[in-house]
Image (cartoon, rainbow, N blue to C red; front, side, top):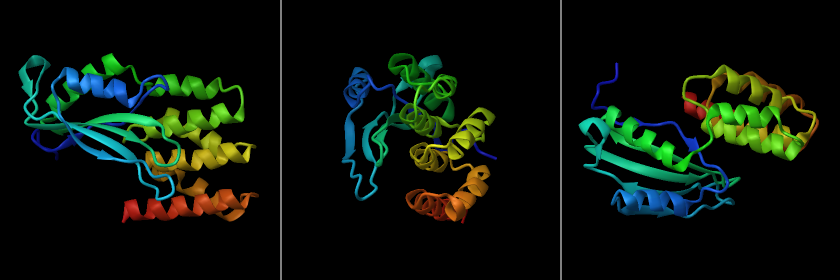
Length: 208
């Protein structure tokens, strides 16, 4: 059982296209948090871009103090979709400041992204919605996410199937393993088969 002083990390909050790293930096500077690390995104090497601000000692609402804490802005290596998350101790303080950030930065919610997926006007929009939904997925398997990414994995358009493999990988949901296994074996497009096989190997490493 987790103790109240265990290190805690929030789920990823996927930022809307108009919200940039400059907006996240403005939020951090407004709380006097120093920037302590920058990793450049490298698509070829598969390296996510990341900027980290240190928030140790910050007093959140309700007199909850972050004994240790950090704000992370991350761009995924392949598609450059921006997300934020908080980590630190104690959990209640991390959750409190994360809620403040959500109010300020207004990221997509899972519900927003489900609606975007359902209303996608074309394959490109459908694939983009699936990617964002995969990044925003909560740690505990969510039926809304499972249903829509599952549909994307079976999409008639190979580009959507390809994007949805990344989306499934982002969730780390083992429920997608059978879909990926079938795609790796039988998808009509070689580039989709190859990506599905790679995603399966990555999932096996997570489970190991």
